[in-house]
Image (cartoon, rainbow, N blue to C red; front, side, top):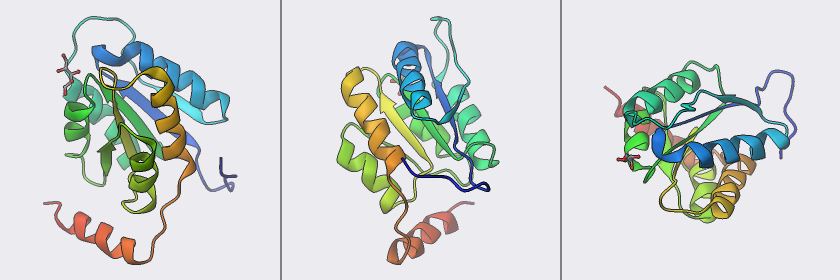
Length: 154
Ligand code: RB5
């Protein structure tokens, strides 16, 4: 993992709906053990709860700068990703492989990662989180494209 300067935050928010609680908690333990300052905003009880609420809550912490990055989960990873991407300034991709998890940071400057708890097992999910957190945005020609995404926000 990168060394952070005193001005860089290593705070990361985790959130999910009811479909992904054990996997979210496993990821939280895993990344906390690497030194990330984990803000796990739940939920912790298994009642059905709508993924847009949890995607939005995590996305607002990232968009406000309270957290540097976010990892969110639902059954497929898709619905919570769609909700997070509605928040201005959020670039969230769903990943079920480590290559994509690295590339959404390097090329797309993704600030949030979404994982489907009914799609990938724990071992792969931890490797996906590792690939996402280890990567850095490359800038250059990719910066222009990311700026084009921002320009689409109404
Ligand atoms: C909940 O059953 C499920 O719809 C949700 O976790 C997610 O997969 C939606 O995208």
